[in-house]
Length: 465
Image 1 (cartoon, rainbow, N blue to C red):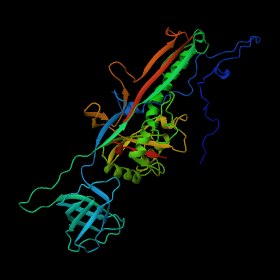
Image 2 (image 1 turned 30 degrees about the horizontal axis):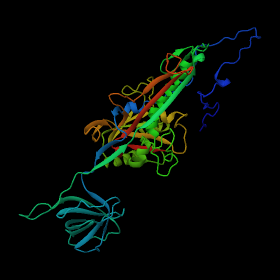
Image 3 (image 1 turned 30 degrees about the vertical axis):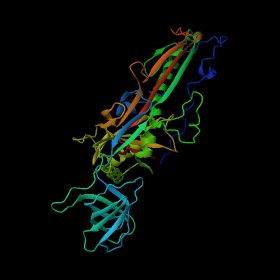
Image 4 (image 1 turned 180 degrees about the vertical axis):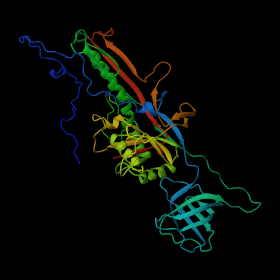
């Protein structure tokens, strides 16, 4: 198999610089040479569209917020199940006391009169019991078994879930009641800034290179290019900050920055949230139907969202294409041409935009994961893709004080009737139309204050390669 093409290599030298270095300007003005060079005035766009932001615009929305803290509630589970339960009884006992040992559980939700299913946690075991609860004291639950053989010979811990209840005729109702349980999540916005400065005399200097940028700006004034690239770069950072942000941990160097102008709290970005409370697939890309069956089984245990979108890098995209192509009858011996008429002259499409395996999965390339100046090519901490549930969900917004229908991913930016900090831009100085300071330059300032809200993180899958 041929190796990758390493020559010529790709350039990672930063195009923007903070100072006027010779490499940034044309310096070959040798008037002793009697021959004029033939020049191309138009700057060649050798890297195509260099921006990488689009992900959040495709899957999310932007809504205003007027607080330093954003909080929302997400539904808890409806049914009750404990997976780390021990029994004080022995095999054959008619009754036993079960102790709930699940992490984070301080008060049990099992009540007297309810009927429960008990299952041994040992993988090779088929031992089960059905029992009725006769007494409850804190995390201790006393039960009477329905089976004449009594308690099974459990190896260690057991799983318990409630499946009903049983009472005699003419008795009083169920003792106690259960309150609905929500999980409260929060995030706080961060302030993102950038600035571009050009001296007044440089604004009055014409160039011979016609420049252009991705947003259509063009002309012979070099500062136009630099200003528009600063804007495009800042717009990319508005998205990548929401994806990569992490909260400052206790005793960290960042949180110790209590003086000065630098922020020190951080925020919960997408990757942080998914690593913390989402589903994480590691050990390489899923490349077989068995791998996706495991993902489907995991989604069944979560929200079971019908439609999902896979935002993947190039390698993951090809792995999915190869997996789906292998399902074709001709996948191992040849190619199937066309769809219906088997026309060999028809262009052969070797890619797939989606498939259905329990749920609908749509596939889309994520430029951020492919761009070599961003996450593309990383080895340590590499992410190959994210599964994002499509559609929206209803949550209770504590700031608005009502249920809100919002996408699973959305950005909250600070705004009020007098201040909108979604994307602020203002000019200072005494050049370029600004007349608000004695600085002989134009300063273009950019600012935004925002946070990403990841609702129902249990429905997402992060693929670590």
